[in-house]
Image 1 (tube, one colour):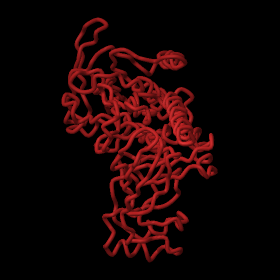
Image 2 (cartoon, rainbow, N blue to C red):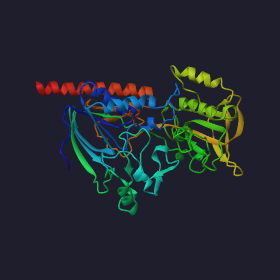
Image 3 (cartoon, helix red, strand yellow):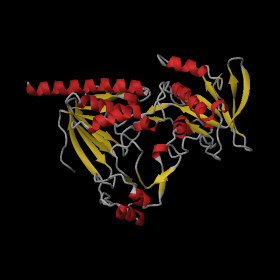
Image 4 (spheres, rainbow, N blue to C red):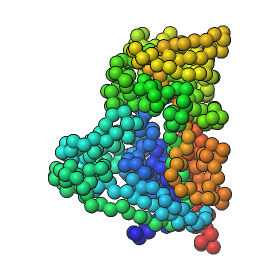
Amino acid sequence: MTTPIATQQTILVVGGGIAGMTAALEAAECGKQVILVEKTPSLGGRTAQLYRYFPKMCHPTCGLEINLKRIKGNPNVRVLTMTEVVGVSGSRGDYRVTLKVKPRYVTEACTACGDCARAVSSEIPNPFNYGLDKVKAAYLPHAMAYPLRYVIDASIVGTPEGEAAKAACKVGAIDLEMPEETLELSVGSVIWATGWRPYDAAKIQPYGYDRFKNVITSVEFERLADPHGPTGGKLLRPSDGKEAKNIAFIQCAGSRDENHLRHCSRICCMATLKQTQYVREVYGDEGKSTVYYIDIRAIDRFEDFYQNVQKDPNVRFVKSKVARIAENESNGNLILHGVDTEGYHRYANEHDLVVLAVGMEPEIVGIPLPADLVLDTSHFIEGSRTGGMFGAGAASSPLDVNRAVQSATAASLRAIQVIHRSATTEAA
């Protein structure tokens, strides 16, 4: 057990994605002390895993790079990665928080040279690419990782490969005896920016995600399209590595469904519209996209983007909830069955690849949320009853990157108000 590293004038931000980074920076740049904790080895969250944003179609470096520079240059922010909240007690202005810090087995002396990775042969599923490929058991999370430090997977600790990685490090940055730590904090306010996770597509039985290799999710497709992804930006089928030029996109995969997620996940329509343009970029007129939808929800400035996609002759829209998917065993293609509600005729359309636009659900599984937190009917975080804790970004509602940043800014301002009121009460 270590000594406290924060006070009641400190704001704790849980989650280091785009919302958590924004909330931490807004508070820190107002002069507040902030502890930013992230359970994975680096900051950036799911935003870092995108290939491009919509509607500008620019790479996430556009936003993340600026935020990372701001964090590196601000002494008011302390970043703790591989750290999880295991307990919260107390009330507004006076919370006691227990954190568990998992060992990285690599110290701050790491220069990210990669010698440790070259010294080992064991591989693990690559979490950054949603397990679509593998990475060495000594790895850098991704090119934009912060902190820019390697991680030694626990699977090779205590093995000859772990020792080989340690021996290869010229600066002595590998500590295979690094223990798990527990930190006790006293903070005045907590911002929950724990983000979202894709709905488990395997639960949508008619779509066969767990049976057919050529049915993937929208987040997996995002990594396939990225030149730094598992296929170097080539849109290849998982089953046989062949080019997928005739792709089906199924909307509301798990969303707006009483059997799965009741809510609209908001980002899915725009994500699919964006991804149809990936297909065009890779294949030109040879690439065909078919969007199966209930309705397209593109709001504000995104409507222009939607209209531009509608004009693309290589993108077809079918107003239908796909009933089921079958596989053509002779070629691995997928056959989609359903009824086109515009004309009410049945179809059995064959495609090379099917992409499920999976819904968003809050990333709260396994997190011991305090009883004071109020969740909505979809388990998104509304805030605490006493007003000292706040939800931010996609932890509070299904939001795109832009709106997640706005939400995080608002949560940060509320947390600052809590700190100010606590300080005023103490002074009185």
